[in-house]
Length: 349
Image (cartoon, rainbow, N blue to C red; front, side):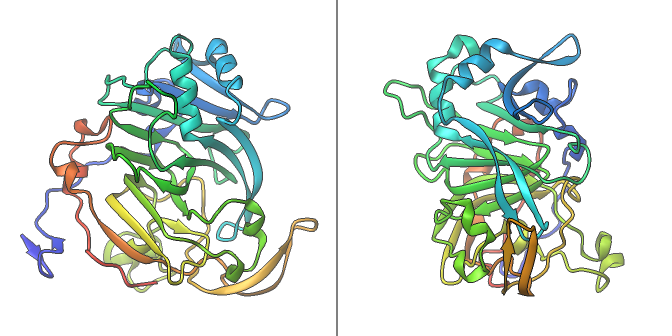
């Protein structure tokens, strides 16, 4: 059945979702165990180092051969702490992933990584990215940033195309720029929370600037989203209604960090909430505002309002190909991707 011109589905069967802890990078956890590639930013090493991991004897061990191959692929992965998140009030220690360079690296080193790009064990590729640090199990300033993903394919001639890609992290994920826009394949993100940066985001220096200097550009993302979301009033359903902080609503499921006024975010996919985030706690604050962050002192001056984002024009809809059996890797074991439905237009801030 449908309401509001069938834009909202009612009478839909209950949605079964994995518990948030199922995303943890631990032996025995589904996504970590099933992933073709397990990358972790090790903050216990000096300097912080990105390593490839495998599960052996019920424990995580550094895959030295794969890590060596990864390190030889210049620019595929790295780390930074130059992004300032105004909602969290923190600089974010990022695991930075250039997706196409990473796919190039895998194609050049199939023996080292143990799989090919056209692997279809779970219906395609499953990449798990994480941050191992002293605060990994609590609220922290960690994140995983995926960029250069407009086309999910290697740039190298003759490289096979992935059949699908699911990106998993137990931490916050930041999608920078277009994702899966060209030559669509089934794709998904599973994360503690989900952030989108537009194509205009080319340098983290702008993250310290006043909102009106962080100008977005039109961007397109095509993937299922399964991530943590805040709860209005601190409770689900009527018990939280009209109490405490508003969570921003479905239209703010993805978190924004730019002024998107007059710009469009095109999105085709499916939204599923995995519950409240475990590793971020900055409340939804609203739109507009300004202020200046001094990276030398760590202080904010002249702040007005929230200085976090202005909303995009939302050209959002459900990805109908999911209902036709073209599901992201690992999703066929669940049913919720088939059950999510969307409002056709989102005009709220």
